[in-house]
Amino acid sequence: MEFNFVSSLFLFVTPLFLFFMARKYYASVKNLPPGPRPWPIIGNMHQMATNPHIAAANFAKTYGPLISLRLGTRLLVVASSPEAAMEVLKTQDRHLSGRSIPDALQQSFIDYYFVWARDCNEHWKSCRTLCRLELFSLKAIEAQSNLRNEKLAHMLDFLNNNQGKVMKVEELIFTTLINTLSNILFSKDFLDLNDEEAAHRLKFGLFKILENSVTPNVSDFFPIVGGLDLQGLRKDNLNHLDELSSFSDAIVKERRARITNSKLMADHEKDFLDRLLENNFTTAQINILVLELFIAGTDTVVTTIEWAMSELLKNKEKMYKVQEELKKEFNCNSIMKSDLSKLTYFNACIKETLRLHPVVPVLIPRRALEACEVMNYTIPQNSQVWVNVWAISHDPKVWEDPNTFKPERFLGSNIDFTGHDYEFIPFGGGRRMCPGLPSGVKSLQTMLAAFIVGYDWALPNDEDPSKLDMTEKFGVTLQREKPLELIFSRKE
Ligand code: HEM
Image: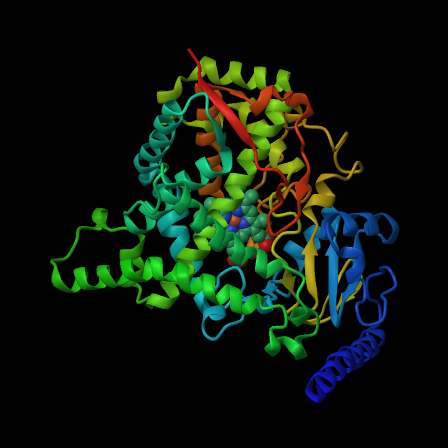
């Protein structure tokens, strides 16, 4: 009883003390970006609760394109215009290239190895270089094409055998992407389209790690109580990490033993795991990198395809146009062997989906490694920085009629998502830009084209597509609140 009283007092007094210390500190920093007045202790946390990307976009309307907010003792700076994004991602890229590792991921050595959660250290550099060469270069993507086609063909066979049934689109795509990736990495299928249970378990584990990492966490807002893990997020993540790592652990052990016992392999026989072992990656480093590629490379693509299909269902005339364009060029089999990047309307639909539903709505938060100036305001060291891609994409000053799905806006326009057009940055920009862009775009193109060319889609219970619920759910990725379910029937 006495302990409870003392600890409750401690938990109340400490944040209060830290809040006033932080307030004193930030008051001494001249020239912070403007923003709404923070409340004692919680700062602006209550105003950012469910949809922080929308809350921050609304504040930008009052305070301008660069705002500052207080989350407990932390300062959050949000850039919400193309100009502000350019200053963060280009002009101050070096100073603002750190990451704030969420408390839920801070466990012993594991946090050190996460690529997206770490500052640009030597391990980050070697991972990105190896991934670029072995996974995402033009040569690598070309070399993966047979494998991608094979996994896509499995998915289409599965669809053909399940015509008329209600299918969860996300599970179909997730299993196909995981198997594509697991074959590129390990030359092995991880999942079976017929085993929903296994897919569900893996997906749940991966998404739970992500979800725990972005759940508002007292330990992040008041790092001094971080060690207590009051919400149990760190512990929960450790359990998921252990379970998921055991998956690749066994494969890595087996491969090490095989390499020691057998003759040298030819270069073309090697997969990504062989390359990692050649580069002296430890088993722990491999487990984490694989996990990270699974997390980053599935959720983003699944979510974008779901949004693209939802928009095409809702917009019949756009669907008709894209079907006509694809029909002229391909049938279902030739899609796999074709260069889909020359299809202007189809690619405009993909771009428009990424604009209207930017899958990583505030990019992955950055951290100021040093104090610097953005738009003539001071960003203190260790501030967290968001680039609100969602706000830029929905700003009528930047995009005409921004809330409408209009692929036509990209026709005859040079605007692209390569990180140089700051009004359209769904893959981010600067040194932390998404390294998986070529692979992600390839998957988006092939899967979406196969669905469009091969099948008619209907909603369950004869639901009217024009009334499809398009509510978004905020997280690291901006998903559909209700997963898309469809009935596919093969086109004649
Ligand atoms: C539709 C597909 C995808 C989208 C829209 C997307 C978007 C993003 C965004 C916005 C970031 C943060 C960039 C920043 O902070 O400036 C990111 C980071 C990252 N993405 Fe992607 N991504 C996609 C697919 C992929 C794929 C297929 C992979 C790998 C298989 C991947 C791996 C990564 C990694 C490792 C990072 C962390 C980079 C770092 O922090 O240095 N992504 N992605």
